Length: 494
Image (cartoon, rainbow, N blue to C red; front, side, top):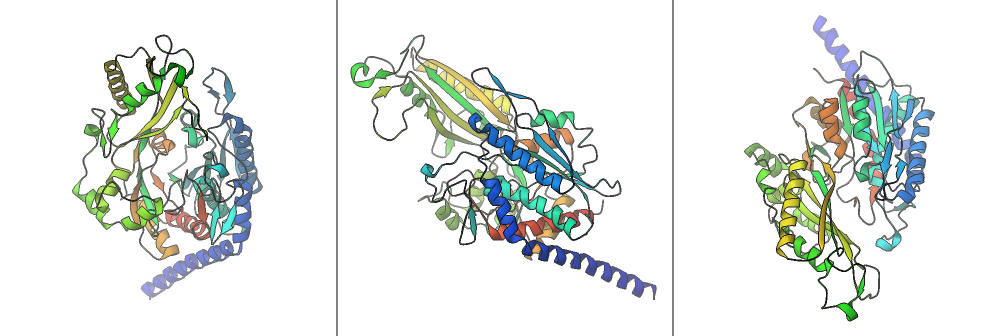
């Protein structure tokens, strides 16, 4: 009889939890158009953190975020994180960081949600089919800069808390938010803030969730690793030994050693197709284990779909494991552009007196940014010296973000699997991410709490690219996923 009563109680408890999720899911479905309109308002703000001229827009975006959380009766603060020094030596205030808290029940776990609301630059002239800051609803997709990276995921988390509130369902965990406006430039000021607030805002945090990445395929995914990023400027200038100003190539071509030629010459010594030529970079990479290889083999990933989606004729690698390994756990050297070079439409016959190459090295365990900086400088300076040029070279590392790696066997990931099963009725893939989220490693080292990346972005969202989008499906079902995840975290057994 006792066992019967116990089993009945457990059954009722299970049904109650199931019923609560159904209530939440129906509420989220019924508010889809409202959620889209809020995203439209957020996308309309050109919160480009890389452009200091757009700083007022970034600050306005932070204030809008804070206001939304205040309207939900959260305990909200706009935290001053200091000044940013510009290349000309002047300083301007960094955008404030928004923190918020919902619930302070010491008997519950506390989950901290990280997100950002700054975006990459975009303009219609870049090749967008729509106006990038006017959210455009086409064929179930919501096109706009920042829609996927990272405004819709941030809003999905906010909608999740709001859904619990509106239905009068008690939050199963305490929820904190930390939302910034400088992620796209390396999260300036945030690391210092995290260190200062380690024993205050983060004192009662048990787990940290980041939703600033995407699925690998149409199957939902949980992310347990990201690459780091060392970003460099290599400047070649004429003074004092070469040309002191831009020169006419017809009048002076053939009489001077051109800085652009020197720059391209040393860049060509850094990489070739499929190979990094800088000594020490690849040698530092941790070897792939058999267990890791088996995980890669089991992941759902169609190479032909991927090839077509990014629009290339041929991929660098011909099998899935090698391709994924080079996306996630191998370093890369990428050249992004040359400042000072003529790039406008038309023709201009000029020899630039000063050019700056901008390139990055995505780093992985067990690479270290300080060592990478030393290796790059030594390699480029040696290659430059061999040219015997009168021009001058200066190499500067402007960003050194470390890679991040979590334990996918942690209970946070088991909770993620359960939430995905509830919403999508499939098992998620366990994946790594080729991009960089600088704050993940900071959280890992400073706050020292378990972290999970729980993405809702699609594999074809076009982050940082033309025609970035978030599908309605991922936006709404992703909100349900977050609602289910909070419940699963509350049910985790220590």
